[in-house]
Image 1 (spheres, rainbow, N blue to C red):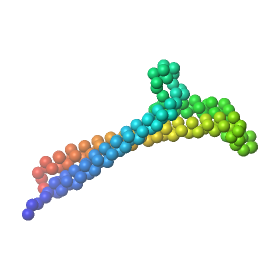
Image 2: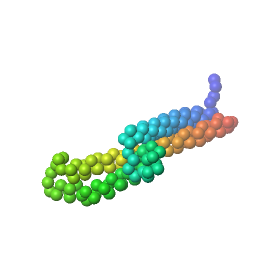
Image 3: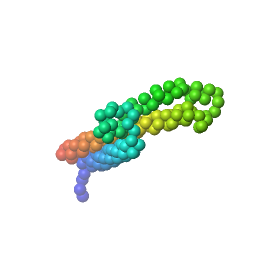
Image 4: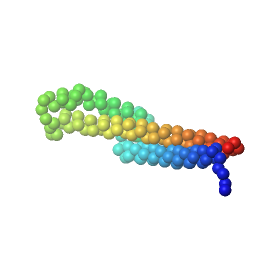
Amino acid sequence: MVRISRYQLLSMVVILMAFIALVMGTVFVVQGVTKANWMKDAMRLENITLGLDETAIAKGEVVDSANEAQAAADMIREHRRGIAPTYDDLLAGGRFDPANPQHLSYAQALNMENYLYLAVIGFGFADMVIASGASMIAIGIALGATAIALRARKIG
């Protein structure tokens, strides 16, 4: 009968944990990168150039990153507040009137602003997922090294 030392048993458990951490970390990194790329592609289709300088626009650049989306959304917010400081101020006790150009412009600005802020949040979340995955991979590597050290240990 083969006798397994407690260090060998512990090393097998740690190897399993290392493998799980590596797999989960890889899945997190792939998902984060995939979603960030999807968001960039979706934003490029919208062809938003607000906030970019003329040379960037001449090169064909569009808003497709968290920083650019934040700048564009902040600019839209300022323009929207130029129409009315708040939604209540816009309506002045009345109801939304889609035939009123001021109401319509305000609603369109609010929609675009929300779209861009949602992109900022999405990019931030994708970055967090990628960082979490990288951490899991680092932990998996550390656990693997620990398991190798435990297996090499001859004391039972």
